[in-house]
Image (tube, rainbow, N blue to C red; front, side):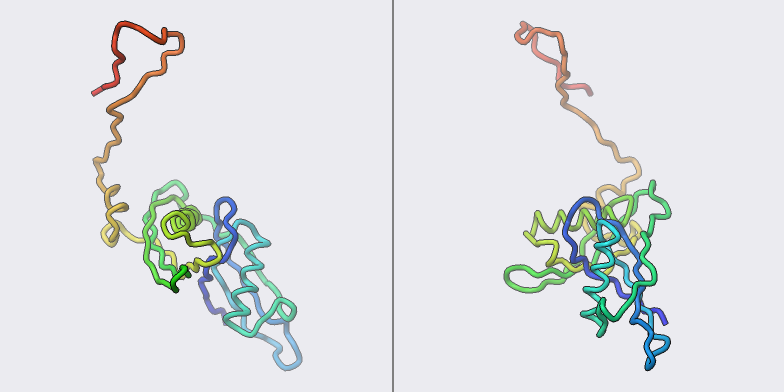
Length: 187
């Protein structure tokens, strides 16, 4: 029996977050010869942190501690199409100074780990939420038609352009003061 728990992201923010699949269980005993296995989807910067987070969450969800348990599998999950841009919907909860809040956010990124990293940085900037107080409940790739946020929808135009209307050219060996004004508009 494998049960899925998407773990909240209680990790120290260092670098880009990676997605790990961790499977663990209690050690077999005389009473329980085949204990149930538990699978978690954990976002962490490296394998040791992912294993540590697994034990942290499993002790909260089930009566299971590192001393009586074993990790059967800890592997990084790689993106199937890391060159294709995707819209990610993220359901999370976080503890602020006033209470606990649920939230839904959207991000555009190439990988799930990149979107989670964006989320941690965004929450720190907008809400002053520390990494330890953010719990990611669910992360999904969502189609363009289901996107709700305007800051994600603005990039769904197929004829989108990024013009550079006003540029200052860096002329290395030109004099600092001249009699002609610089050309900054290239339309």
